[in-house]
Image (cartoon, rainbow, N blue to C red; front, side):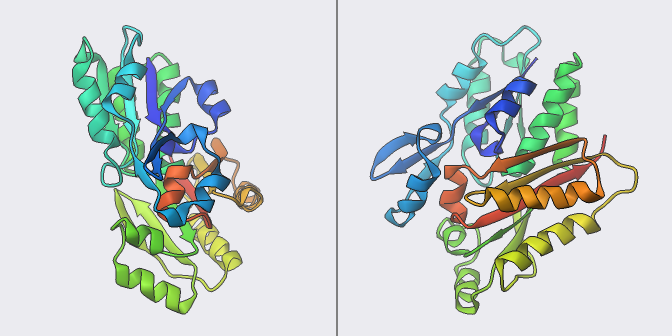
Length: 274
């Protein structure tokens, strides 16, 4: 059984390799030149955001290539939220193009970044037990319904530019000088109470997680950042001080994600369950 995702899942390469996950890269366009997300540094992307960086999901051909030669027990493909990207549609197209479409299942995770990554790891963990396509797909869909992602950005301007939040909200945030918190769940971005500082925003993210605790349930969690790894590590350590996670990792919002959020972003993704 092969589990395939896209690079928006923020999985560290070593962790993807450990779980046997295949990650298909997202794409950017800078100065009318196509760029594979894996071939460009975060510093270069951040330095060129004002040039109007364009993004796109992988092509159907990229998914067909990833599906080529998968084992007889098939593959489950897990994509970034369909409202964010064309990636889901590309994966569905690819699934119809392979010689045996019945061996491929495509699941819209309805989220992104570490939350998507946690769905992927849950499915991959199920696949490692020898479970079949139905069971792995069902596991992924169950986690999609449970996983949460809460993050803070320095400005909503980038999200507004992409039509993901109203322009008036971005303008208000910039005028007030606040750190904007939001929750991304079920393919929708929900604004949360803002903060006046980065440190307070991080505290609020932690509080959203703390109030969600489910007594006795295993925790699966990811701390996320673009250029603030130390802060993400500290945030994860605060979580670990209260609960020992069954799954945990520090992930990076990739260049494609940063093109939409801006670089000054920190977040926490989690779900409570099996």
